[in-house]
Length: 324
Image (cartoon, rainbow, N blue to C red; front, side, top):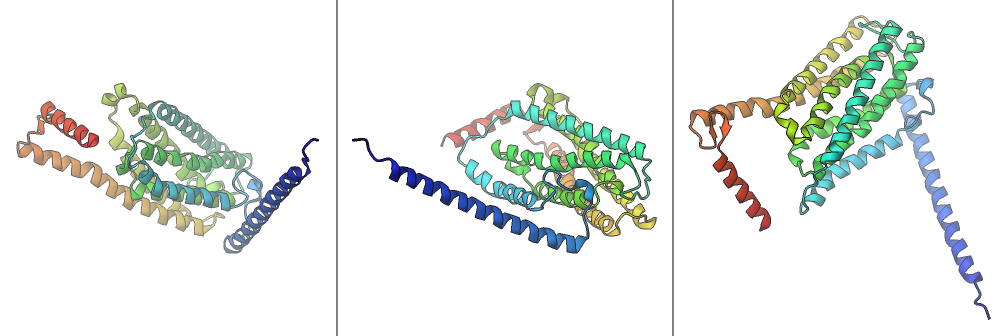
């Protein structure tokens, strides 16, 4: 006699039915959560810009929020996971990743500049509905700018994989985690007009920054890279110029919402404070410590060059410690 397969089929169908029910319940709860969040946001911030309705990741805030929470969890748990593991090189993928972001930043910078020119944007204040077709061009580019902030989470993940935990600073995490969320709101309420300026400057700075990081991933290129310090200076200049241009919209207002202008000024001030502190810690203190070593006749440096014997001795000690 052939074995009866009906009980097994019934059990399988029951399991599939239970899984489908759980999936439907999860989808229902997610839809309710999205509707609740969206209703609160609409009450607080007013109606959204209908031109971005249905665009990827913009319909609901939940995905952006979830991505941000996952990012912070990886920042917290990643170094703990890598603590007893060897660092990854990631050299090849770093070159490709940084080259990709360099090209994307260059594309966004070019499209924003040409869009602003075509729309005849006013530097002092530009509303979100007077640029005609150029407004849609700006909106499409700024969506890519928003999406690039999600891609840039990989900056931190590469630090974790390479065990460069000293680079995961408060400034780094704050900047990456907030930008994605801020630009979700910008894209839903003020996706063009006066919003273009900071993104344009930032795209230009990122062309310089990611080209530097891409080239620095190639050891043969490192001796020729001299502009890292000037990237930070450029970022600080960018924040100051953005505050000035945003303040113009406050002094000579147009139909662009004033609340967004005040928020951007506040956010730029927070970045200036954090980046200035980073600059002082990274460059001014290093320069002063080098001067002290030189004046004290330190054996570690002679005429600006590292003593090869002391460096070799330190490397040997580090290797012994790793083996233990």
